[in-house]
Image (cartoon, rainbow, N blue to C red; front, side, top):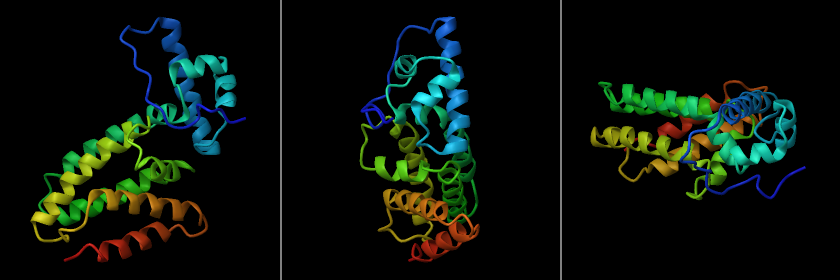
Length: 198
């Protein structure tokens, strides 16, 4: 059953360190949510996640006030890895090649869990969403790579990182809808990249 707290809203912040039992509940909820999202997609029932973690739904909401806050927490490891990859690519000799590698990594990330690409598309215009904790740092990292490629004359000046992020999420969503065509995402990305050139 869906809850009114399933979408949007700011992430909960605390200033006090968590008690040991609360920290265990937090980690158990993350582990179960990660498995549930992998198995059922990001629309997995929050009540089921709480039950499988051995806590009540109220405990889940105390740690993660809505679905996007839980998704943001689950995907932090992937976001950290993508940010590290962007820093590596920022040193590449070929700025356009670096940007293409980054966009491929974003498409792969958005396609890892069923429903993630759709959620990222939905929050792209909602900076107040808890899921923006994932999308904003990625957008900033991608913007740096885009500017380098534009300054090298390899990408049109009128291309924005917002457009590229929307396109990569849309490509991941299209690929999710065509699971029997494993090459679809790469074909769509290749078509997109042709339009980036000056």
